[in-house]
Amino acid sequence: MRSPNWCKAALTEDWQQGGFGLYIHWPFCEAKCPYCDFNSHVARKIDQSRWCRAYLSELDRIAALTSGRVMRSVFFGGGTPSLMAPETVAAILERVAQLWTPANDIEITLEANPGSVEADRFRAYAQAGVNRVSMGIQALNDADLRRLGRTHTVSEARAAFDIARNCFDRVSFDLIYARQDQTLEAWKGELNEALSMAIDHLSLYQLTIEPGTAFGDRFARGTLRGLPIEDTAADMFEATQDICNAAGMLAYEVSNHAKPGSESRHNLIYWQAGDYAGIGPGAHGRLTLDGHRHATAAFSQPDKWLQQVETGTPDKVNSLLGSDEQADEYLMMGLRLTDGIDLDRYAALRGVPVCKETISELFEMGLVEASSSRLRTTLRGRMVLNAVIERLLTG
Image (cartoon, rainbow, N blue to C red; front, top):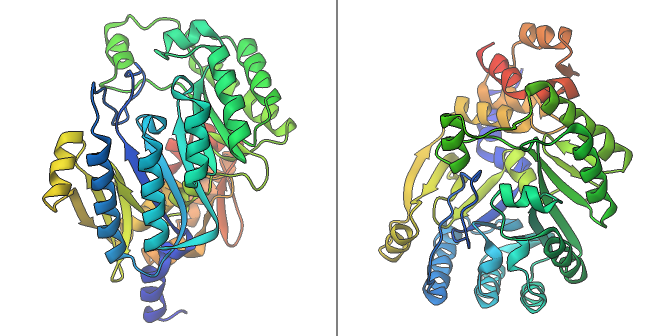
């Protein structure tokens, strides 16, 4: 039996199994998409210099808490980070390099919408140090782009993709399926079209109707018509796995596919329960400090966040996570990965192992696979992942 001191050390250093990364949230968009429940805002005028100063101030604050760490990834998310001034991105990345030791293979990702892509701007991002772009294309037909509230066309998306491919070594893009009036055959054709483009990573999300969004309001009123039935959406998910696997774009997470070696290193930090600092309006973080793991969340309103940073109180929430909470987060996030979770790591966090009877029950249902050291979901299990996780947490 391992000693209590070993368990305490495992808890203290657990984040290192996932690594350390930085998330920068840019909260502004040109327009609010009707399905989007992210913290994004439309603003007429943006003081780029003031925003840059605020980000740099936050980097200094976080670095004082995490000195000596190796930075594995930086992710500019939003909002639409491709609306950021390249000078702001360059200043942030220069400060990151001064404050932390960058990993030899550090991944620096910037999200972009096709409508905000310009060749000169992308070249400037690349010169600043961005080496990966994630594009929000979402659909490859104009009618559905309009329904989704997107401001770009398919031709603009393809042109933007070509610019990105010429500027960056790694390019990913997002598509949404199970859209209004979309058939299984139409989705298969669209996915094959996407795979014909020279890419190494795809994020493929089933359309979800979130409360508080324009789609959520229409759905509640019964005016959001044409959504596929549950069985059709499930068929689309299965077809997605088959088509992507045949193309060598393997599923490494529920909604993410990549060629081997091209997985999103930043998102792996989340799913493998590493530490990450969240900077910007509404950004969340997980930081292990003095042996204790903290959950952080920033003020979501842009003006409020700026004011709080300038007065030295940027976090809305900074709370300690207990060992049970850490273990549950590891299970919930890790089971999204095709590779699953390390059962010994879970047991070290919680102090007790995952219930064997519950694992056996889910195994008999064809929802999980287990070995002596790992637990993972099957394809069938990933289709009902929330139910699987709930059963494991309550078992």
